[in-house]
Amino acid sequence: MQPSLLALFAHPDDEVLRCGGTLARYAQLGVRVTLVCLTRGEAGRNTDPALGELNLEQRDLAQLREAELRESCLRLGIDPPIFLGYHDSGRNERLRRDDPLATINADPLEMEAKVLTVVAQVQPQVMLGFDPHGIYGHPDHLVAHRLVAAVFARSGSVGIPVARLYYTVQTHTEMRLLQNGRGLGVLSGLDPETYAVCEATIAARIDISLQAERKRRALSAHRTQTGPLSTLGNLTEMQWQALSSSETFSLGGSRTPIAHYPHSDLFEGLPLTQVQDVRA
Image (cartoon, rainbow, N blue to C red; front, side, top):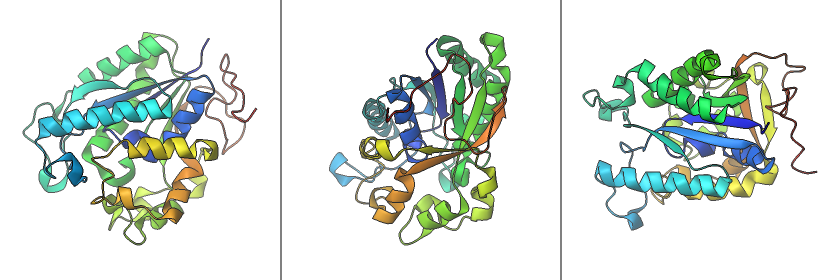
């Protein structure tokens, strides 16, 4: 039985920053890695003038970001992404309350049914998603968190129940580092005590040092989000090092015993999912 991992996120580029190295690592180990993306990120902004107007039409930006995500998955070495077809809800003053296809307005049970169809196809032992605060509180990230938790709970209805659910998280130290200098704009003004976690919450810390270059290349595939006018495209070397040495996860749920905490392998102890160390 081939080990399988299913990641569920809201927008193109969500798959890279906090877990891209982990996705690449497990793909290299022979795990089937599937990414479900709720939207095409059409409410975002273009930060690379070379691609056209900064405020692109939503249809044009959606096409660009879909292509970027497909390229990112290729560079990570994982399967092509599965899009659920919902719309980016935006945030703050751009929140799209009147769009019936925005994730904030979508039927939660309909969304669950769509993801459960994917679960039935790929039969993951492990699922990844956003933590309860969605890293920085984006409304779509909060919807994605609720969705991945609900799908984990219902996964037994479509086959073997998913064994473990992990959430991408950042420690207080990591978040403060990303807030320093120019930093990540989306984190500006946010309290690490709310949006980050203490070391005791870390369930798994995955070494991605050997996948750092893959992660960097995957991030650079998102040109609209990493252009010269973006904060994401102007990370300092210290900030990048913090993002490319290891990735951290909290535990959303487990149907199997976990021998120690934190652990260094999301599949550790699971039956029929023995994978060799990537360095072997």
